[in-house]
Length: 209
Image (cartoon, rainbow, N blue to C red; front, top):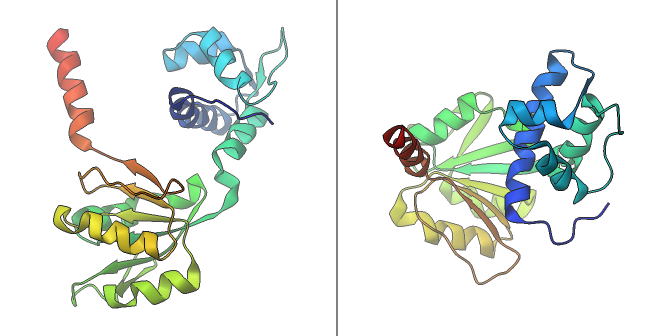
């Protein structure tokens, strides 16, 4: 399956394809055309075909796409079936909310543990996931080798926490600290989540309306 020279824009549309196809699959839709899928997603049929062509040949002319098969293929491209290991560092309001409400397993991740410095939290569980003391972080990461760390620590501790985890071998970060993290290691990947960006985008759209 070819994946060379895939743009960031295409990669960021793939989860949307997967989400829409998953919803169609749950509702029992068997097949869909690129034009119908495009109407639902607000993009053109040609854009969908161009995006998917980066990864292989999908669909049949005159038939469209088999929803279950395309959902499975895109899920495979995204690594949903890889069962990545993930940990959460920082169990404040946001960290706890993610543990309680975000279904990591639906996106191919196994949440193994969370870490915090608060004695009131350490030793407890949230949605079945144990909260361990930060002093146990190094030993746990060396033993379990998680693929990704979710960072919900205070801003002042963000880069130092990331550096510590990078030194321990973690290569993926889902970063909610509102700090742009960086690393000299080209193998390390950051996915920064800024809630204000999304809200300001909405502000622009309703202002322009």
